[in-house]
Image 1 (cartoon, helix red, strand yellow):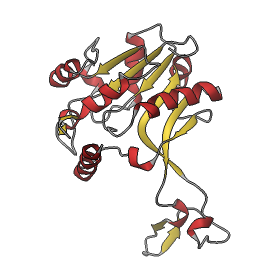
Image 2 (tube, one colour):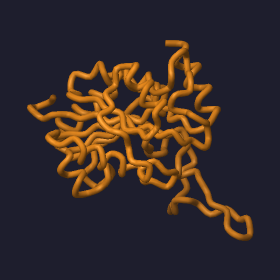
Image 3 (cartoon, rainbow, N blue to C red):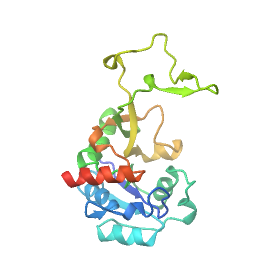
Image 4 (spheres, rainbow, N blue to C red):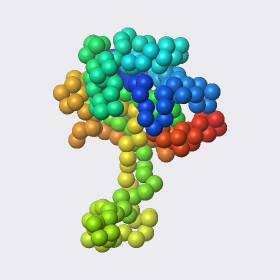
Length: 228
């Protein structure tokens, strides 16, 4: 609870994964991937209830073994490759009323720490924003990116009157890292997205911002977790 507002945290983890089969429960640095998110979320000062949303019985069993509540089984139609990421969140909110804020914690961000989870919640409340999402400063600037035209000629992704030639002159650019999403539930039910003009940003360091999508991501995170 924060400022007398009740906080629901949701870990979405479906069984299907094309890039890395059974990714959410694949062992990484000695634990199932999902365990890293569960254990860190349980340390939060603000989360009142931590739940898993999944249709997969094995994922459910493992999540419960690590102390995560599973109050329902996610419908199969909300667990497809084409299911929008917000749909399981809205489903969980409707299943579990009487909360004020919702926190989305994807299990594919095992490097996130307690300070990132609680920091994102605190940031939203202190700013007075209806939502806050975690971001990280990008290594590659879109001001130095191009698309290829049909004749293979370069076309700048961002049109500039004068091309920036020095890295130190480039503006800071931030990208979503997928680690933490927080929102006022009433606002989210109306907007249907964490990302709107009113959404605030919580900046995380690059070394905690990996989102596992490929085998290379997995190996990097395993190495990073092993060094902790």
